[in-house]
Amino acid sequence: MKYLCLVYLDEKRLPEVPDAECVAFDAGLRANGRCLASEALQSVHTATTVRIRNNRVSVTDGPFAETKEQLAGFYMIEARDLNEAIQIAAKIPPARVGSIEVRPIRPIRETVAAEQARQKH
Amino acid sequence: MREDAIEGARTKVGAIYRSDSRRVLATLIRLLGDFELAEEALHDAFAAALEQWPRDGLPASPRAWLVSTGRFKAIDKLRRASRFDPLDEPAEQLESQIDESASQAVYEEIVEDDRLRLIFTCCHPALSPDAQVALTLREVCGLTTEEIASAFLTGATTLAQRIVRAKAKIREAHIPYEVPSQNELPERLEAVLWVVYLVFNEGYSASSGGALTRADLSAEAIRLGRLLTLLLPEPEISGLLALMLLQESRRAARTSPGGELVLLEDQDRTRWNEEQIAEGLALVKNTLASGRAGPYTLQAAIAAVHARADTMAATDWSEIVKLYELLERLQPSPVIELNRAVALAMRDGPAAGLALVDAILARGELADYHLAHAARADFCRRLGRTAEAQADYRRALELVKQEPERRFLQRRLAELSG
Image (tube, rainbow over all chains, first blue to last red; front, side, top):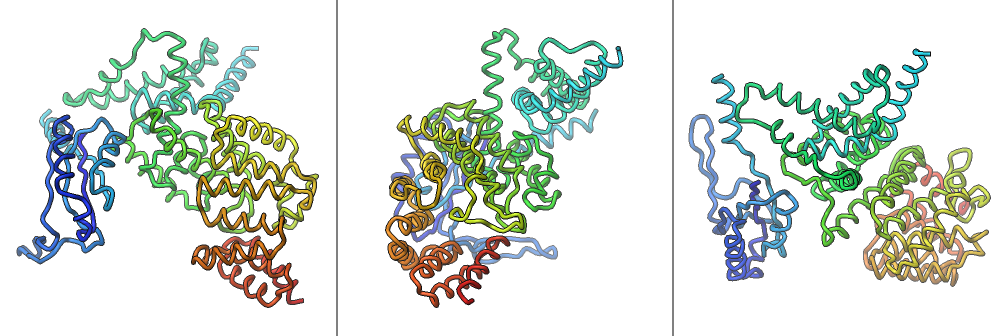
């Protein structure tokens, strides 16, 4: 079962979580095969939002929603169930100053493939 | 004669539904891995029992019969639904999961644990508190959606949606159907006890609306507490059960025939339920003796001091103050401090209570809590500081939500003005 752990925190508090600590945690998670992908993001000031409106591409500065805590990075993890995912999320260093949103992955490719197979029959 | 036998079997099905349907459901959820599927299977199994038992007689073990019938009906349904779906083989997976070699003793143990699995899953902290309560009452206690909705003064549709959403989260986020491991147990048990106590309190003092008590919910919470003490040997479970029993013992004395709130000091103590008090006191004694008294046990111990006293004056207030101090150490909270202020006022006089309440309010805490202002008003009243007391009762009246409490505060204010 795959979960995406979205790391949110107030960017002003980023210095409270040393990069080296995050990298060490990430290395450990990759070593035991729990981490499928992970990245840290540039500051929310670099964000650009793209939409199609009236058949035209609309580009605006900034994130989709202004919030107190900003998306700062993510971990795609493999866990037995939500309990294990919660245990892993609790160890992500920024959990101390920000918050981790744990979202189960929706198996969209499998669902669509099954639907297409059903229609063929 | 034959008609009698058929009627007897039907009655028996009804009785087994009431006593065992929740256990059968708990096991079916584990076997089928899905709440909705298990509920349908439970329904199908009882429908089959109604048809077959009057004709063929009662099976040797009705519960095991219901579990295996429900499971077969569910597998059958899945197989029919997935006939044209070669990618989806849940029925085969399910069948391979059943370990037929398990001995009877192991089987019994697993089945007993199913009820705990169900409770811990319904009270999982990843579900919203409202959903935890609704799901526990629906799945563990077997209340209908309509019953829960009316107990919580919510629309049945809203409540049904809440339950559907919670079940969807359990399924889609893979909340496991298991009893937490030993190192997770204390935290997870805390969540379970919190849900049980919330249900009790909703029944004991409705959070809003006209009826002061809703006895059914409290009875349900006590039943849940009893079930938990049977399933898990944890002192705090007994502590919570004792606390609920001791509070429940005062129910009859707590409201006047006209539905008015009667304070502890004015209650007719001969109307307290002796049976519940005796059970509560015994539980408190054993739990304190275990040396692992938690917050519920300490609150039960406080209720026990009241239960043992024949009058308000004869109450051992020193003991109560001491217990509140212990409770604050375990669980620092301004509400507990406020309760200690009330006990302190009884032991050392209203001035001592007033000093503590003022200290709490000076920290900016409990400013919006009606009972803090009501307590301050009471201390001022007893000290003869009438104008201050009136102002505090008015402030409490602005904040109070529950009708009988409002009427009580208005009576007090009227007495001062009169």
